[in-house]
Image (cartoon, rainbow, N blue to C red; front, top):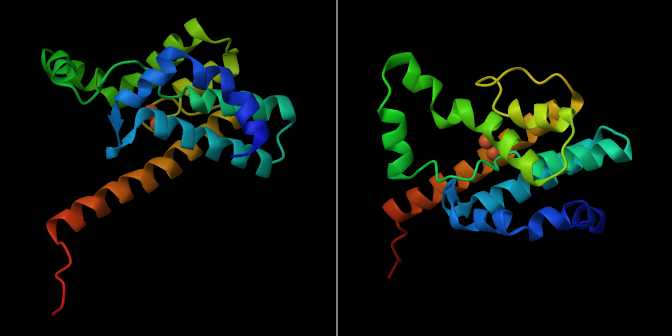
Length: 172
Ligand SMILES: [Fe+2]
Ligand SMILES: [Fe+2]
């Protein structure tokens, strides 16, 4: 990876809570929240450079992207499923992970790291259209980077499943 990218992200990557993201699967068994967050940050970094954002904003969007899924729970766990299922109808939908985790990640990340309002808003909006529409270049770049990386990870996971279901037969 790029040296400047490493400098921008080093303190967050070294944080014990961020290291803990390695314990949580995200898009498939081979992909953790740590992998996903790091890939999204690098994608956002490259996009910000491509769109000629000034240096301080490249730094800001890269760090926001690294923390965009810093919600600190296992959304695939039985405990989370039970939490959501205690509600009915609209209240249940409103508490589903896809709708809530952006705002939660922004709150939890800003308790541990120094984030400005624009970074917090970008994290909150990254699930657009399931979250409010981004209102800054940082918000749009983060939303785009997350979707690009997630699509790649979900596709890779599906290909693994297909290969397990239909293994190649060796020809004699
Ligand atoms: Fe997310
Ligand atoms: Fe994400």
